Amino acid sequence: MSQSLSKLDDHPLAMDAIQDAAEALLGVVACTPLLENPDTNEELGGRLLIKCEQVQRTGAFKIRGAYNRLRLMDWSEKKRGVISYSSGNHALGLAVAARLTGSSAMIVMPSDAPGSKIKGVKALGAQVATYDRDTENYNEVVERLSEETGRIVVPPSGDVRVLAGTGTAALEMLQQAEAQDTELDAVLVPCGSGGLTAATAFVMHELSPATQVYAVEPDLFDDTRRSLEAGERVANPVGLRTICDAIMTPTPNEYTFEINRRLLAGGLVASDDDVLTAMRFAFAKFKMVIEPGAAVGLAAVLNGQIDIRGRTIGVFITGGNIDATRYSEFLNG
Image (cartoon, rainbow, N blue to C red):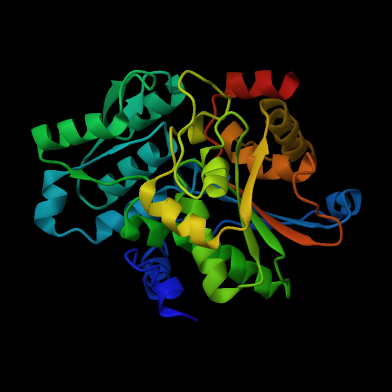
């Protein structure tokens, strides 16, 4: 394997760092199941393997990267505390990671984030500052508050230590598939800022190069797909909305896009209606409660964006943090 792909030039993500994170996370996070339903496979004409990060601690995969970053801080850094931006899942993970490592967290959240997520972050002891996603740039808000408070910025994905922790989910998926004597033809990853997507693409490139990895996004927020086609980062239009609040990002992260640009097989999309169908499918076939943004990968299988017939496809379900009333409304149409 070439040095440039292994180290990604200026982005030194390495399997050693992911494997080290996996050891450090033992007993801190859950080893989430990789589920399969024979009846569903027969219906689809292929094998569907679902990685269930919605049952992870804090209800999403994000704690993996957040904890790995904070555990590597020294005492003086932990004392300063951390700050980040998030619509909910990274916020929850960072709040718990800060508590576990003796630090503190401040989260910059969009003002239209689900109230249950904002309340959940506060309940875990983190401070919350809000911003308007249509008129303010979250990076600028975080930078200003970081300068004012002295807190260390821990982005959801644009940090190699966060990415190494995130990559443990992909490593787990691959090991679980191998334990079942199964080779993954493709893996579909819900994509917001692109961290789990990039980490998964890297792990598969290093350990299972025949496995294709696809980013999956809401069709109104398919900035990664369009950026892959353009060969450079392009932004989403301002003012649009989707039920997939967890992955409503304005533009691909610079750090993760460079990895995704090199290693992804492509980008897929799912409409809000496709996502609702996938949420209902997951509940009916697997008894899963999942949030909309976490369902886009499954939606891409069900809407035919990728052909599963005669193939084995792994799908990440990335989170299950959704208000019960809202979930009931979605489930019942």
